[in-house]
Image (tube, rainbow, N blue to C red; front, side, top):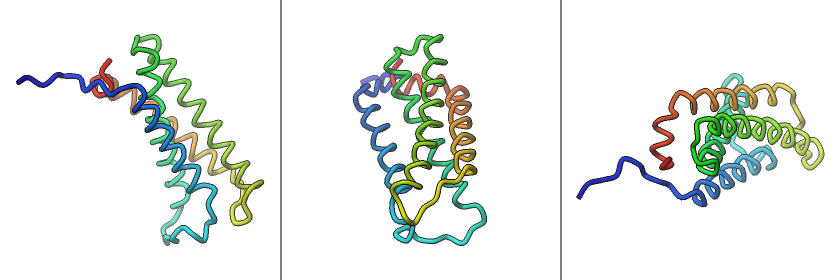
Length: 138
């Protein structure tokens, strides 16, 4: 029995994964900060924001690449859509922290960390394009 080179993850599964990642990020960014264990490490908050948006961007790139059928010109559309979505999602979360929570405050440096994470996600996806295409089956 020969294994296929492509895993061909269904588009619906990629969408569900991206939505779950988005929900987890939303929860941790809007939950009462006293519910989250404190870690005594310099700039841990910015590292977490970077990692959240790196993963957020990658997860949406996987979905949009599959949705747009992996055509080379559409690859860049998937990267751009995912990047813009990540940046606006991060800005929205920061605004909601100021409006909906009492233990969190909006922080422009969080938006910067989000944007850097999203940028790293896009460049990583470009660098690993062939592997990503095999994983999602395009």
